Structure formats: C-alpha cells, structure tokens
Image (cartoon, rainbow, N blue to C red):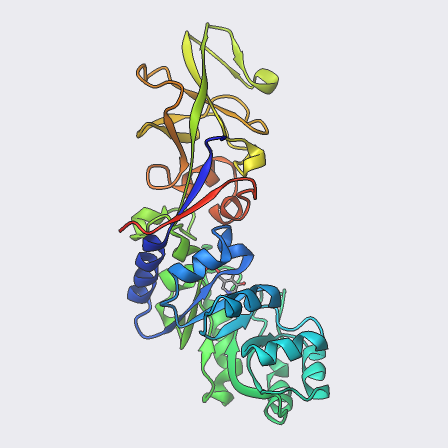
Length: 358
Ligand SMILES: *Cc1c(COP(=O)(O)O)cnc(C)c1O
C-alpha cells in the first residue's frame, strides 16, 4: 500500500472549539464545515465539533448527510436555497437558510412549506459578493416577517478585510448603522479572523471556520501560536534515497541544483495528493521527527527532501508534510497561498484515518 495518509484528530477539533469559546465567551459558536469540512471529511468534522451550537455548510446535500448521520444541531445553508424544490427538503430537514437576494424571498413567498424555516438575512457591507444593500433591509425584513414560511430571523454580514490591515471598522459601522432600527434581531458577523481580532463584533453567533481546523486566518501568525492544534496530519514515507554530487539537479526542470554532495529522500506525496506544486525549495518537511526541507519541484506523485543532515534517515522513515511538526500555515506561505486551500485540496486518493488522541 502506498504509504501516504491523512490523520484527522477529533481531540484537536474539541480543543480548537474550546479555544474559539475562550475568544468569544459570550457568543454561540457556529462551526463552519463547508467544503467537506475544509478537506477533513464532513462527518469527521461534525463528530469532532459536535459540541458546537450549530453547523454551517454550502449545499443541501451536505446538510442532509449530517441529518442522516444523526446530527440534530441547527444547520445553516450559507448560500441559501438554489431552487424551490430545495426549500421543501430544507424545511423537512429543519435547516436554516441564508437569504441574500430578492429571488430567494420570492421563492419563499410562493411556497407552502411543511415547517417555517429560520432565516439569516445577509447584508452586504463591502465584500460585494452576497447580500442586500443596507438600504434594502427595511423592505426585506417586512417581506420576510409577513411570510408564513419564515421562522426566526438573524441578521448577518461577512467582512472582506477582517484579516487585513484595513480591518473591519468601516464595514462594522455600516452594519451597526443599518441594523440600528432593528435591534431585536440577533446578529452574526464574525469569521475566524474577526473572532481573533475584533471582540466588538462577536455578536450573538460567531461563525468559526479555519480556527477549528487548527490553522491561523492571520498571515503573521501560525495556528499553534494562537493556541490551536492541527486537526489534520498529512504524512507519508521515504520510498527511495539518491546520493548526488555537486552540480547535479533534482526533479523536473532541475529547479534545484546541488552545490555540494547531498543525500536526497524521495517521498510518496505529490501534487496529485494535494501537496502544492508551487511550494518553493526550503519548504519545511519533517523526516522522522526532524525538520528538513523540500528540494526540487514537486511532481505528481513524489517530492524530494534534503536528507544530508539526517544520515540515519532512509527508506521507510516517516515524513510529515504538515501537522504537529510542520504547521500547514508554513507550507501555505511557502507556496504563496493560504492553509484553507491546501486543506481543501487534499485529494480523494489519500486514505483518511480518524483518531481521537488527547
Ligand atoms: C467560510 C465562511 C466562514 C468561516 O470563515 P473562516 O475564515 O474559515 O473562519 C464564515 N462565514 C461565512 C459566510 C463563510 O462563508
């Protein structure tokens, strides 16, 4: 069997959820488990995070999978309903829906649902992706309040710059101003970066995503420095060793050329497993518990690591691509991307083991 494996640790999920609650002690926590639980597996994420007050996913398929697996928490569909047919299923499964545009209101008004649905009204505070203009809020609420298919209403927004120097001040003020006349509704504003940086915007319900997986939403901090534990470890083994000479290149395009004699380990992990092809020479990789580095271009099924300083390491030794020893945030930075993308991209061919290790 090819030695690559992703290990998902349920204990890390529980720990990270507790960290989120420490940062936002007065809010309910909605665990965002869209995109197959950020690549960790939808059901594994839900199991590890079953202490959350609610879940959020994208599609009704994901929500129904959770219901079939027995999860009874509120589940929010983050992009709302895509069709009238979905509304029936959503209502029967006790789902909550985001309403972000007029067609979704029209859809709700035209139906007769078995049960009214909780609705999150999304307000656009500058992301300019989903949501009503603040000025439309009055008429939107009027329409929803008079719709028999609508149960409780929550007001929400999503910040464009919570992880950036610009921060949320302008958008947060705009939100506060637009909801000032509707003070009775609970609000939900905070993603992970907002949870960490802006307690003034925690509101009734925070929507935690990346933090729960143990990774940092902030470019200048790693998950562990925020007290988080990685929920995923991606590991493999050395399957070959090459002894190379000064001037020898390694891998496609000889993107790395040895300056001196080196030992190179070949690892059974490539971009077809989800390891980023754009990771640069020097990206940290742990071999048998010791930090070394990537040399040469990542290929489809293999990558190469410098073993020169690890003379005792060889074929069969364990390699950690990311996890406790190498933060996925570090790998992402070396590949000019964010951990979200790496975690979501772990390929279906990588076997997953779910463990519960305190
Ligand atoms: C994905 C998502 C989140 C979670 O964001 P993180 O940065 O992972 O915490 C929160 N709210 C909405 C609307 C989202 O789409």
